[in-house]
Image (cartoon, rainbow, N blue to C red):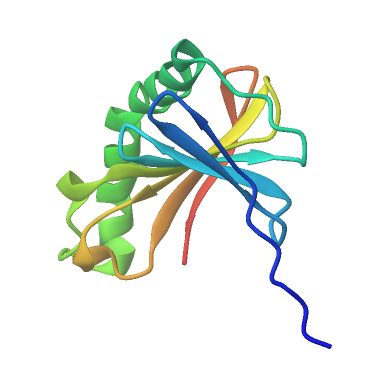
Length: 129
């Protein structure tokens, strides 16, 4: 009557370990201190230059992001530390679409800044908790 728990599928490539999440129907891994999500059951392993490309594209927007955080401070209060902003997660839908979540230190609470990219262009963005 007892069922053996299913093992979580894992694949190691170099020093990156990809783990499958059946709940999210995605593969998750960490690279350069950033959490990544690859949606779908089929694991297509991105090369390092692609991962760096996602990170670079988001980092190029950091001056703009910090400017938006400064604007947000008017609503959320001056204690929000814009300098603590960092890329927390990148979720890859396919080769052309991905999203990035920016978080901060404890002054942010559960507030985050999200951006959705398509073909390298931001198509949506916003703050939320």
